[in-house]
Length: 201
Image 1 (cartoon, rainbow, N blue to C red):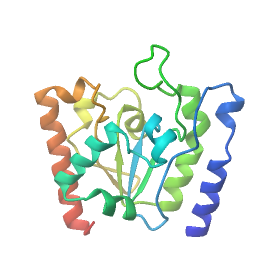
Image 2 (image 1 turned 45 degrees about the vertical axis):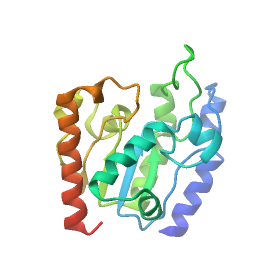
Image 3 (image 1 turned 90 degrees about the horizontal axis):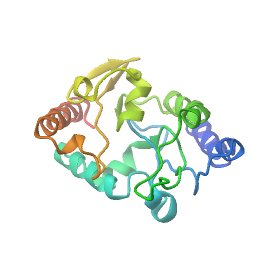
Image 4 (image 1 turned 135 degrees about the vertical axis):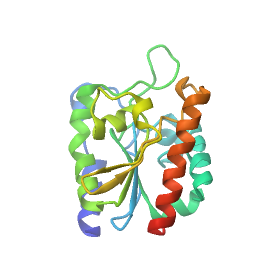
């Protein structure tokens, strides 16, 4: 599967769908990992730091918080990046928000334009564990009508995979600041710790 995944990644790198549709995306597609990865993290979209500086998923301020969470599970960042797959619902930085604060959220159409890339990644990597991070990634598995409080802190079995959702780790997120929601995050990290131990991840 490694050759097939490398071919897919080359195709993603040359994709022009959103540009041709008139969306102001910036920078190259951002993802990382190999076909033998047993865990996949799926975020919303790369941010300006990922697209303009590091070219690595989850390497901006939100990524730092995400890896602090993973540190509680027992995963060190360098080892995690080397062994697991990291991608997103949309692969390119969508550009800044018109208000000048934060990043623009990819539209539903952009998500649809990019959706088959993610589905192909899931098929070729075929991870045992998926960690969707943020509402957009969570919607891929649970639809649009589920509330985060009903999903964060729980462990699911979907399409033969263990799925443990996490909220978006942005510092601007009011959701993760609430004590009752922080307790749900800790419960989710507890599930990941159990998965890490049981599957020797």
